[in-house]
Amino acid sequence: MNGSKLKDKLLVAGLDKESFSRLTNTPISTINEWSSKRNGKYKDCPNWVESYLNLYIKNRDNEIYIKKLIEELKRGSDSK
Image (tube, rainbow, N blue to C red):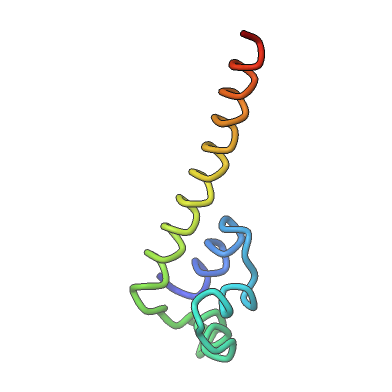
């Protein structure tokens, strides 16, 4: 994944560079380096970055789903 895709993936995850830096304990200067162009090309990010963000997004989506499911279950038990 290159720096351009990193920017897109961070948007999907609802994260900015600073929060990603805190979550991963990665210096912000490193993240800025990944997401900036050099000689017209973005640098590649380490492989773990894409898998981390994919898991972060999936986990966030699962948490939303579980909260909705719990709410529906509570409403269903309240009507009995």
